[in-house]
Image (cartoon, rainbow, N blue to C red):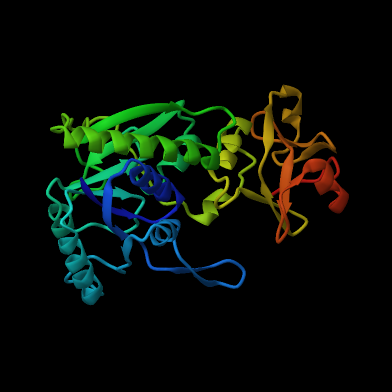
Length: 319
């Protein structure tokens, strides 16, 4: 089976690795243009591009696939490459460009997408973040036959994955990436043997995982500790939940939720205690004990190391 692959970040690269290891013929990879990254802001190839070049797979990087859009030459070049690939199917995973109808129709069996949620819950750009933020007990991967809508296509394969109480977007991302790669290999093998039943998504239970904005990651200490915990974990590793103290901004990483009714007399954000075991902060309900923090421009530090460089005392207030 000849497979065009379209994807950009590490999540997609894991799927591409699975397809390559399974022996599928991959004549073409589509990925986003190189972007500035790192302290020197040098152009950096996406993980998908790096893997493709290492394995001598042809790569195209259009800025758009719309033939009538802002970059028609890019789209025309991509169309020529897609047609020349003579693919049976296109696999799409976190690509980052909208696929117009001509792309959906180009491969003989259309386009299949790896989506990191249990559709129709969490359609959209940030399904892993939003599932953790919302306190979902489980998520998973849906292999979907793509159509022109936003994650609205028929479901081909679905597998669930529990969300643990300590899971962050980073840890959950890695497990979902492996699951997505395995499920897509299974889907293509089934397609090669005659296909699989496609199931329409339910009309009930639709939610949208809107793109993460950095401003969302500011901690609101008036919220319950459990809610703040979910948000810290949802924004780990990006963009990183943050708070302020004495005009300095800190990112919050590892922590524990404590049930401490006696602390409710303290204003939200008040430091109740601070030692090598953690910084206990009063919340709207309960207490959050911070065990790993980061100063602006610094590294993540265990709380004992952090307190050697920044003196936090009971009575101070995070805001």
